[in-house]
Length: 370
Image (tube, one colour):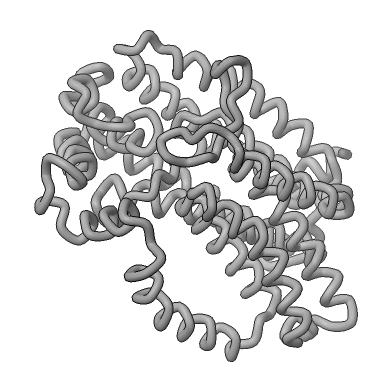
């Protein structure tokens, strides 16, 4: 990669991600202090590996990744099938245990990148004869089939949070690809009609409980509503500057659970206060908006679709995780990217950034590059 291309890279994206990761490590240090800092040490190691992976991917032309995406998609499908035969962890068959439990790998996380790459490849092939080709029913059916297979396997685990991340990313990609509004209206109508049916007849009991708890957590304050109530107490107790590292009541006395993953933002809010918690939100907003700028600035449609899909992943995780810790959205077990504990999530997020950086380095024209 030459100097000219390096100058085009959106360096704010990795800078914000690294700052978020450092804040996450500080929060993780506090949250895992009583357990011997094992998770903190693993996360620090994963951060180093992830940054190296990002730098490597940054120098790989994303068009090469698009070309091999059918193979990557096939690997994703095989891994998503294979993980269904593993032993359930917390009721879900979502992880491969490696090294006698020393590490775990979540194929649904890694598959995010592969499926976004392959979907961009499929849409680009469909649109070779014209951008409006995507609106032909037969072509749209192919796209929906590509989406349905991995989505169904992820729901089977079950992992509804990750499935929703896929839906948001894919929806944005199809929208940017020029889907006709009649399909959008039809999809909204189908969703509105099917939601009550899904809720009454197909949704498992624990998922129903989460939705009911979202609307009235105080109804079961010692049971289903316990986690979100403790989270809101923690965030509120932090006020402006926080209670201090290792000094948060909810964090240190064990009231927050799981405090290293789902509710890491609550730890930040309690011990570092509104200033740092607000900074976490702002840093995520910068990453998302810069990702959208990358999508707008690249002439190649496949690159635009990939950047849009990655922006969608970041958007969903940010809104859902922070929203659920504040009681604004139902709890789904979605991590806060770059911040929550999780090696696969960290690696996937930084590899996604590496692809974004490569796309941004190849921008020629666009709203933000004239």
